[in-house]
Length: 117
Image (spheres, rainbow, N blue to C red):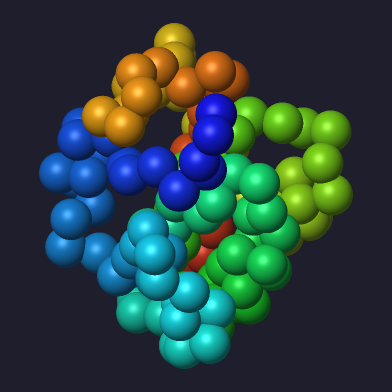
């Protein structure tokens, strides 16, 4: 994958379109600002760790966070999410991105924070 700033697939975008999205392609201010009460994050696949740390902090403040991530349980960030009490929902099959077709890896939606946020 030559570029890891891929837009959220249309099916997911429609669902999360009214949620705060601090990680829009080409923008990096999401790590510097406070997030809204309901947040959807599709971080860069090459370096999701800063976004994971920020998501955990924001969820501890009572926010509902959903992350779209590469399904990779061998990483430090996966361990941190697990320790934070995240719920992992694997995506069946490969997601399809408009920028280049199917992802070359499996994906997972990760939920953090208050279910009533």
